[in-house]
Image (cartoon, rainbow, N blue to C red; front, side, top):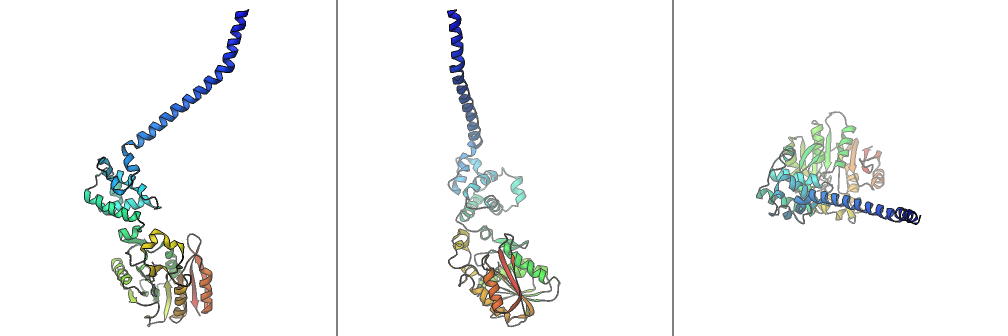
Length: 346
Ligand SMILES: C[S@@+](CC[C@H](N)C(=O)[O-])C[C@H]1O[C@@H](n2cnc3c(N)ncnc32)[C@H](O)[C@@H]1O
């Protein structure tokens, strides 16, 4: 009886005390094994490339220790980590590879294992080093797409922005016919607006002006490259040299950023010409001059279309009212921000 009692006590003792302890131990063991396996898998995955996945500099990407660092795919994988401030890091590296190797996108995908030559490596280090310092990709590769056309750009001109396509779109809607119109694009920069209009409306007589001779040189090169001969280029301080009016349409994307605007601190903006970006009077000075001068240049019924800052719609409309324009309207860009205001001369 006593033995039986002891046995029952031992069973109870095991069930209530040891079993929970053993269960907890089993759970810890499983967790440990799982962790070990996943840790091993992670390390195994990156082990051959660990030096290039966290490279400290572009030269590290090509460290001689690991020759596999120098093929297209490895370079691509590694270099994107070097551009943490770029929203388009992978695209930037692909573009740099296309330029350095003088190949197209398809080639990069078809030959990921191709080793890079030392000249190519040096070019890539130079290009991406400048990109990392904030230089816009468009200046590095020398062109920017606008209105589905390639525009040559350098640091003498603003890089044409996608939101400016709204100006082109509105001009084409306001004058849907291929009538012979006289058009002035003030502050043409790379020629983006004038030349895009010219490719759509071959009968329009377009004059593109800028105060910067260097900008006009680029605009002329773009006209040549795009095969456009219907645009005349003229150096002018806004409307000063436009003495052959009246015009049916005046269009402009003038400088409109206030001097103290914090966006000017963005690394990419440091490379663009100040004269193309900044205007006095909280960014409104050039808009005001153009609204005033264009009044004397336009036909009765002619339109003035202006791009401006997202917070300047109200002020620009007031300027149009002051100068007695009619049918004043503001339109929003793709981010639903006020971007273009236009009006008709009475
Ligand atoms: C914002 S950029 C626009 C460039 C181009 N139209 C575009 O949309 O990409 C403004 C342009 O106005 C020119 N500009 C600045 N002040 C000017 C002035 N007083 N008269 C004529 N052009 C001027 C600059 O040189 C620059 O090319």
